[in-house]
Length: 422
Image 1: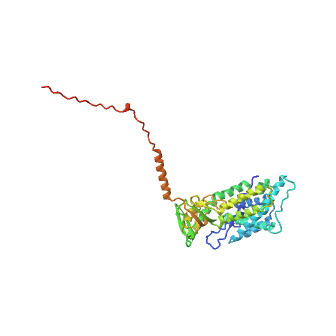
Image 2: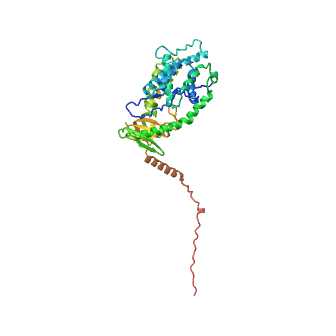
Image 3: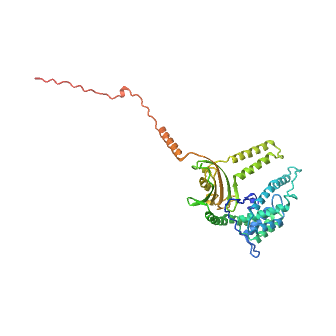
């Protein structure tokens, strides 16, 4: 059977960040969960619970989690009126460590043993009695699932969500899913896909427009009109005066990108940090059996790390269109915060962490500017190239010497004198 997972918490590694001392004006996720046991079957709520339940029930590691603990932690998290973003971030990091340090090795060893690639293959223990106990890991999954559901803005009837989750426990094997659940797998997929494809984008579009209007009213925030779209900026530090001249300039900068809900999408500093950790781990790996492969892995990470530490790009190649306009409001050493609508960011499709039609927050610290050719220089080069091309097209016509026969004959008329007779 094909992998069931559609939406499960691949957001485990998504980091939600506190805005610290800076004002990003994140828009809190709107609570859309409710609990109505008397309501008839809500197919979307059941489908979401079913999807997550099946994903945990038939994980490659096996049926290993305490589902009672997961449900308890889920209910605790989903009931919060104010989300503790710092807690959610730490919870995500904890699950990331569990995946790296326990889950992957456990699954890999089980597959080797299952393929009889060594009867002596030892399957490492998935849990322990300390940091990664069954209860702690299951609790973390419960909080993460609730956060995922909340941030995806599903209108969930918790009664049917939990019911579906609990129904997955009674499935003996993957072949018996449709016989034990109140909707089949195809219906589950269709309902969730339709919500994500048709309902969610319009909902997020309205929420983003509402959020942008609120940001526009904040102190020190100014608009930049780009055709029919408008983004907003705030200069946090002006810089030293060496400004960007045009989109052919090459710039170096640090940046962070957040969703309007406060989820960190991308960060240059975070990427450098992760690469440094990966390099340290690769250099100290004592399990590698082939030194040449270890050396290649280290070399690859070192190259990536060097590229990111010396990150630079031509302005016209920026992927996030709105950032091209916002960065020009500061000079070297400056910092700017941008609020960018989806039309100038990730568009109607979004990505793994950005929902369809979702606006973003972007912070930029401009570290250097190397000027490209100016419009005047380019115009001059084009004129010179055009003139050179025209001159190259004018070819001299060789003139061969003419023979005497080709010369015109000049006939001299001889005038005889007239003799008059007397």
